[in-house]
Image (cartoon, rainbow over all chains, first blue to last red; front, side, top):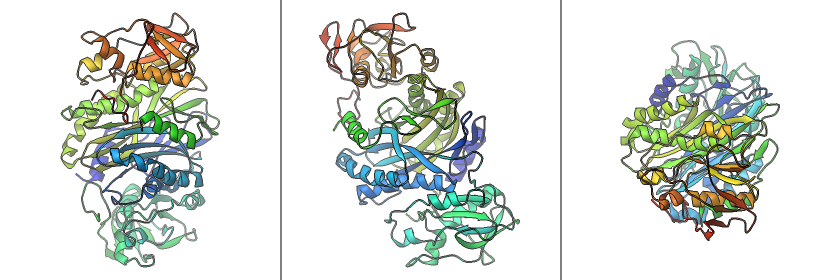
Length: 282
Length: 282
């Protein structure tokens, strides 16, 4: 079973939206509307596992940065402002001495974006495993979702792609929170690029029921076209809307077969990272 | 370093309360007050790891129940009503076939308490590791905290203790949500018994700056006094307040050395479960 299949099975068993829960499984964040509140709250959680999401020899402060950056990027993708996080850590005994450095990296990024660590859980295990939940806020009804792309929309990314892959996945990605907020009320759909342009664009197209044609891929310095198309962890934003939005236009949304993606008119096979399909780069 | 020491180090580095965050690290849940909302929101997250929190041969539906029950118990301890959860799962490849059974157990408990699964994350690893975040709600300012116990208060538990230990930690605990809600506005402090009476009472006393004397321990059928005092995972509530509250009175709160716990006048050494101190029963 692929990750998408597992999520689809689960989606069929639980309601996508119910009461205060405006949006459930399937987007970058869940959207919750507290009774009487002026803002919607966004919720996302991301696992970071040794040997799966980062190389074993990555410095502890870099691990801390990355653990939080992944979830902050989901908040950025919805146009939100992060408020607080919960940090769960299962760690091998000998890693306890790296905890201070881990929190140095995490708290430095947290302070930069006004995020408070509000709690979490601690346990021990054999392989360092971190799960970070972030709560963000967005003006009521203004969250950017991935299901709003329309045929005729221009397709954009917020920056050049393939940087993380070209650097051996050692760079410290900076979540694009300001870019996300600037798209509120302007982009028709938005998500973050965590697993690679080709697979993430497929997800956006499937959620919106549209097709897409990529005209031009902005390749980061030292990256290959291959890395820009299929490399993950760039944490740039992928979004759609009218011409003239900030960022780099890379193509057009179309109305043919939902999920069909072409690059310069040729069919493009998604090849990013699916945690269960093993079509992995790592 | 013990779990308490690690948490204390972290607490010194992040604000306990800030803006909408009414309460941060150190209680069963964090408390968040959304702008303009009539309710406070409660947030908690709990790890469940194969071989640490449950035996390797536990049935997948029981694992699903337990993964959610732990976090629901934290919501119960604050007097809240659970709203939604996020479920992160890192699983070994061969465990994928147990996912349906896992969700059966989790969703059955979720439905019973009106909790929606709103999202989560999936990845693979060598040892099954689950992290469940639950968001609950409580009328504004009415959450039960563990720092409000006063000398002279009666000390209670919601039920007999040692049941989980006597059953080899295989029972499916039922979170005491109705009992927690019934204590709102009545109990001066409350927490759940996850790691054992002796260590959890120490935590309550330290948070409140009080001492406690246990007069009588209500022992569950087939459990020993030892199991009732130090066994974990009963998920009963431990709380303080005036005489006449529902539940079983077990002793008194005192004003001598904060954190000093006596049983029938004799000093009681905490011996519950600390994930980092290895004074463990498992």
